[in-house]
Amino acid sequence: MKLRTIALGFSLLLIGSFVMAGREPISKNVDDFVVHQQGKVIAIEGVGNKRTIEAKGGEIIQIEGADNKVVIRGNVSKLIIEGKGNTVTGNDIATVTIEGADNMVNMGSVETVQIEGVKNHVHYKSTKNKSGQVKVSTEGADNMVMKMK
Image 1 (cartoon, rainbow, N blue to C red):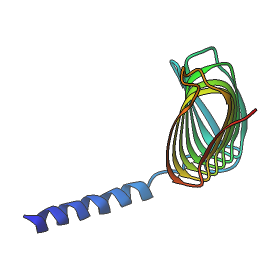
Image 2 (cartoon, rainbow, N blue to C red; image 1 turned 90 degrees about the vertical axis):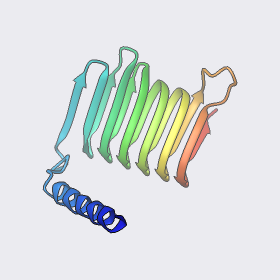
Image 3 (cartoon, rainbow, N blue to C red; image 1 turned 45 degrees about the vertical axis):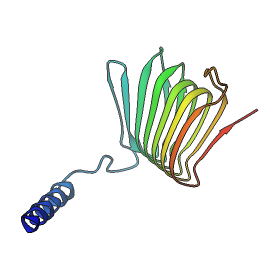
Image 4 (spheres, helix red, strand yellow; image 1 turned 180 degrees about the vertical axis):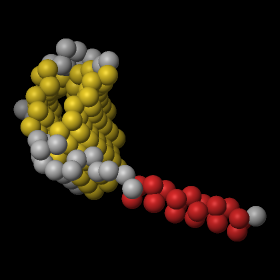
């Protein structure tokens, strides 16, 4: 029974690697930059681009890619970064979630920060939490969440 389970797991892993190998990359060249908006979710995909997002309040911003520079004007409920070397500047962001490496986030206010990865930095000026402290969860090495004066 164990041998059959291991064989099935290996087969699924092998099939998954073939499927992933056949996928197109998110961005083929530096000029590719895609912005999708569906309801309150604004998804940004690309490599090496600059973008300013005008938030009306409560949006979820998803950034997927590398070396992008994004400015968020207005308040958003959540910022999700998946990638490497992205720089994001914003006003009030309730929750910041980062999965990747070498990302930098500078903002006015934040309540919750969740980081998985290496060398990600989040700088903020204030929090709306009653405790006066940002709720922080990090996994990985050399990640930093720091209050700026």
